[in-house]
Image (cartoon, rainbow, N blue to C red):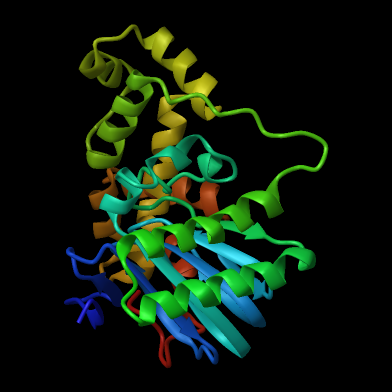
Amino acid sequence: MSLKLHLRENELGHLEISPDTWFYMNHIRWQGPAAVHDHNYVELAFVLGGSSRHTTVRGDSVCTRGDVLLIPRGAWHGYSRCRRFELVNCLFSPALLENELAWLRTEPPFAELAGWADSFDGVDIHLLRLPPRSLPQLRQRLEALNVAYLHGGSRMELLGLLLLVLDTLRTATRPRSEEHPDIAERHPSVQAALNLLHREYAQEWTLDKLAARLRLNSSYLVRLFGAHLGQPPMKYLAKLRAHRAATLLVTTRLRVGEIGVRVGWPEPKLFARQFQQRFGLSASEYRRKLLSPFSPGPPAP
């Protein structure tokens, strides 16, 4: 089978797609509660009807008809309180995003969505809200894609139908007054810095250490980060660590102190201060609140 939901040791759900699967989709007409899980493919989830509570690293929100969720690889989420909740899930392999769909990294609205091309752990889940006028066309195109998928359509046929679905998103989210200009490619040094921080976020980074690894002047690196990401490197790293800690709090049974060590904040007071600053809750409070819709009993302290 190409898809499997399983429990890893001491962790919650993980949706695993076979590495040889190019593209996967399903249409769930009556989605029930789905406990917190992550997965190894980038996902677009189209809400075609009903409503549910959607739990992510940022907390709970309501999902309703016309919402489209972009869920990067490694990010976690879950559904609860589902009411006539109809969902179409499309999951994209890294090969598909890096080859046939690579050009989307410069195409709004996909270019603004971190995780579409760069699938890093702990990246935010993004929400697009489509206007009601675009929903009939979206449903029609998703149904055509699903029929071809279920009948074993060729890769070329599926890609053509998939592009029509993505074009619906592009058209529905484009400002009426003017077209978005193409978004410039990310500076190679910024991309190299992001690769380092996402791969080695638990290291004892300082601005000077990061700049030295990249063979750049630290002031120049700060200017590059500001121009491309709107924040300095160390602030970005703090956000990344906090989101990774939040992910571990919800998707594992690790103790809070161990999570602090794993994300690069071994000092408990520093971890507590940084996490509280980001989420407005202590780590223990955050874990209890986010898991409460899915757990019959209290999670580990």
